[in-house]
Image (cartoon, rainbow, N blue to C red; front, side, top):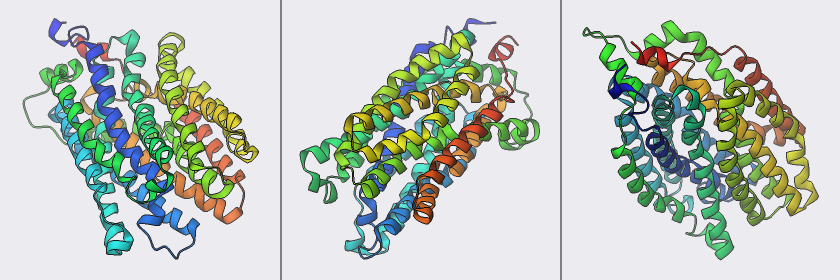
Length: 433
């Protein structure tokens, strides 16, 4: 093995930090939209004379558009990342996300331009979805493929840290706005987090342009035959279709359950239970910080106790906490609400932090970007994009939170079953060729 392709030469810590910074910015942009969708978009981008629950469902429908675009982004940038390189794909996705998010902050409202407002919102959300669809897989691979075998879960979790860090920044920014002036949020204050993304993208570009290409991908390039090859998507479907299906099945809680206990819970707590926006935003901000810290700890445990074992324990904890998470809202106790939000996010950290290594090593390196991107983004469209909408519809039809809880428990059980059957490929085999 040459030094040029070794994980040590690739500076795994630098790759991990670059993955963290980039995904933080991408997820900040994504969650700014999610937070605004639950709080203000229903009144700003849809007619004011419709039922509030219908308006909320319409708002969540635009939220779901981003998830339906993510598989397309996974295919496009998966092909790009498996053929040209992980780094180039990541720079492109960051630029796309930043421009789309900034433009959302400039949009006119329904009152100003009518139906054109939600139409433009949907278009920009679609661009966001394509960007995230290509982002996650590349960021994970840069971190995991640059790390030594015994620390892949830990370094891979840095890409996952971008999720709670982005959520922390997103909910924190809205929390600061409402603390400053609650009425400001519904006039022009909601625009500020979207516009601020421009500065964050500039920082992310500087970091990403300095990072080295994945050593595993460089090894794949060296061993690639000279004659043209078929598209990575076709190769992934032909040789790894079981892994794609199992990858989708592993992810319902990681990509969908999260939005049940954040986006839907936020809207349910404010609209139905009557909890103030400030309490919910403060709680979600604190919970995001707890998840940020817990993610690293859970990944560290994954390298020592077994990655799949930690994820399984986390999935079981999500199922156990599902009902108390919602029942505690009716108590009106701020302390209990904050406690349950934080406990659920610790459980989510045990699922989400180590899942980067689990999913990336389900596929061989030459189709890995495509394989994990398609699995993750199809799961995102099915479970992430539809979860808030499905939960809202279930509650509207039954008037009870029990069907929502049952949905979350079912997602955890499916994830556990698929995780038990997940294959694994070792990067050492590629680097030693």
